[in-house]
Length: 220
Ligand SMILES: C[S@@+](CC[C@H](N)C(=O)[O-])C[C@H]1O[C@@H](n2cnc3c(N)ncnc32)[C@H](O)[C@@H]1O
Image (cartoon, rainbow, N blue to C red):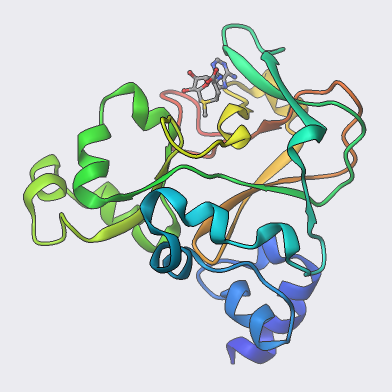
């Protein structure tokens, strides 16, 4: 069922189609596309700090996938008031340009250590563990039976592998929603930012962080 139903959806848009119904990483791999490694495979190959470098995302070849190179981007003060630094396009970027959210992979206990600290602002969890993390108490995260299991959440606050994606700011009020120009996508348990359309030179990359990031703002 997944193969038949999801094949067209994932080939048309791996970002939007990859959900609880369609595992686009598995679907596209089975269709012969060159996909990046999934998070567990990258972790098995290179560990919690080195996993992102082993993804092979720059060499991936799937529809709607143009790898962003570091030199196409620059970090400077955000165009959004009070947002600190942001990530900007040096030159024009095409639609479908992707950048992984790299950082250190965390166990549930390590996620627990970050809850209510500034590092949590830089921590993202894949669908496979996000619900569990949300439903676990602090004690369960730190000392429960799953505490030492890999949650595959990513902390990009550093120190760790270089991750320009960590500088992508998010709309935090409705009047910033018009500036959103990148989607947050998941493939193989890895988060990728993807440009929605062409991004003009000098424009800041801005995402919609979703319904649970900001207090009092449920996303665009
Ligand atoms: C993943 S970081 C983005 C990079 C960050 N601006 C920096 O300088 O390192 C997310 C944090 O950036 C800030 N931020 C992102 N978008 C913002 C916005 N629209 N308004 C104010 N602060 C924002 C918040 O502190 C948020 O927790």
